[in-house]
Image (tube, rainbow, N blue to C red; front, top):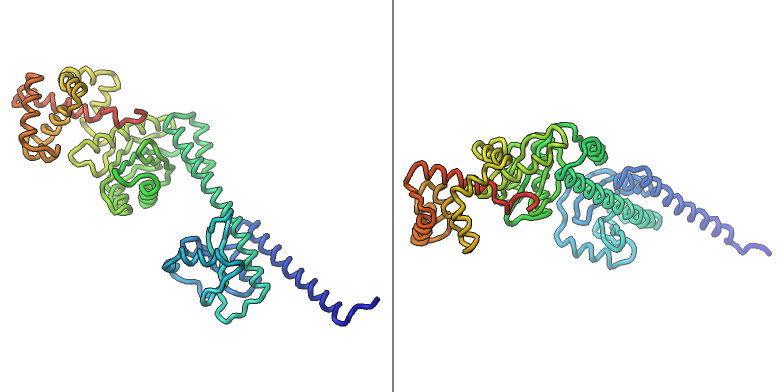
Length: 403
């Protein structure tokens, strides 16, 4: 039986067509396997098609570019990005958008980015479109892999920080830190940050960028309602607060910085003292800002006395009656006395700080005098009460780690 006219040529063309498609698949797979990420895949696509290739993340920011006339600086994402992604995802295959042909990059149904070819003259062939579509599949696997690695590293870093704050053996800590690219053998500081409104990701991101702005390497995580940084140098308290405030657009954060940790064994104590410093700052007349434990002065004496058990006796002696009354009556006489002394006995400033009327303040002060018998005009009495209320602020258990 003889071949029909043209059959041999058609088969030869089909074989060449399959070989071309196989070559496209092999080159794109090899580019991904080479470990050069999005840029490697864009480079391979440009080499295969001769058309400029670009990779954007799902928000529209340029991640990779292969070919001439790279946008500089990176363009801002176009408006109505979600509508654009919806249009791409609703169509099968590539979609022409003005002077480019775009393909959504998916993984498990989620759009992770966009892969596109610049085709101003409409010269793209079927093989070019096949390369674009197959490239989007390879890129989807690459971006999903990158996300998994990032999530895994974040989880490992947070677990490492949790263990360091709780106390862990030094040699194991060094090895685990090295596994995530952090050198723990240099002196470190613990930084505790709280914000009344910005929580979780926003505060954490602002804190990390602020640390990077001071050229500090860090491990970060969360503890209770605080963001915790472990940094390889002493942060400038004022600059750190300003930097975080600038990034949040809000200066309400409160920061405590612990003393230096020459080895991992000192980290739990530095963490405790960073929380002490944060606690003092948050209960001060100016809670917005940063305080370092090694600059607390008088409060460090309180902490030292507390560690050997002498402070509670002092508090009981001077504030015991008021503390018991507050606990039984759910009142705030100790807080009132503390604010009154912090304001130097000024009625207007004290009432404003407590958000109460002057008449209410006068009533509370009479109640304090009646319960304790103290003469608040006596210099020695005021001195001891001021020291006791400051110690009470410092040791307030409601804001200490582990409470």
